[in-house]
Image (cartoon, rainbow, N blue to C red; front, side):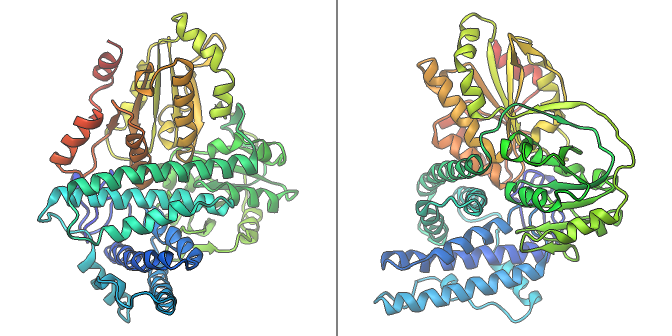
Length: 542
């Protein structure tokens, strides 16, 4: 195997025996084969669109299949075998429709005619032949091609979240197919891929806008909300991941059963949505921190656990019988809920001890989405003009286990008292429970939400730039970002598409980025790797 799509990849070079995430070599190869097969399907989908054919089923499948290959989503080889088989079936069925519409019979690349082997082992061997190979003849073009593919995986994830909530945009799916097909073209060079990478960022902005509309349309705009970090006596269910629809279903189905529902990881901001927090009194609080700590934290949780979307780690024996997966998430041998009927999760929770006594703890504030922040934009502008707020720092992104992420804790601790910290995604768990105080009633720590809420953060920056009558890059705003997986790659590409400069990125730079490509990003966008908190604060604030 060879995989270097995440920040924690082995030795900063690539995983070659087993993924740092826990995926085995056969799963890595099957994921590569699925992406290759999706590229072939994309060639046919592009032709189908030219003939005005309906590709709705293909678009939906593409989102789900690409999302399944994200880091920490699906580790089950049987599921990938099934996905590859379905991809080929969809491709061949769509080919026939193209031919019947008068289109061409051949598509010029082996990916459009590929036949999977008869066994999982043989399919994994096929995947080894079409996966990422390093180094390549044109390493820079390959780096940008992989950057594009990983960005597309992130776009697919956000678009899939949005689709679940009924929000769709054909232009998003069209670009995903066009871009996947383009990666099969050996004639494309660095400049071609740079254009596609920025177009990927533009498309991701649309996908995140769709998701924002889906979340706020279904559950209302988040409002400032205190979330308990302690425990309440009673049976318990823990919901992790990102999917608000799954959380809502758990709340509906467990209502009146004496079960308290807790969030974990990126589900924390869900407490700020009015249609969730006001309707369900058993939606109690938050348990634990970020995804990489789940083995230790889940082992101590005395109830049932549901993993939605990404962020799954290998379950330990201490809680293997108590954990369930949903949607695209999977681990071999872990019970999977495919139809949002969460009765098995509820029954498991009722059969476990739950928390035997109340255990009060700290509280944290969530709910500072764009509507909340924009509602006090006038006051914020006044405080800036009066010199009471000197600078804004967006400190957010993915958390992880790799050494170096303590930088973000120390950075926030050292941010001067006349500055405000905005945060989103699970990177905030490095400092989410710190009391930074207020500036004339404006909290100094504002939780914008999940990584899925990056659109909200972008809109806050745009609104502030309009209020100050300047560009985003001219604001007293600095972005200090951490990354781990492919959703973060898609968000970064969106920021680059928007022309946002001076981003500090860490804890390490992507292994798939070559020095030449990094130089281009530095030249065009002044992206810089993080140094130390003291050095970076001094450089930013002078």
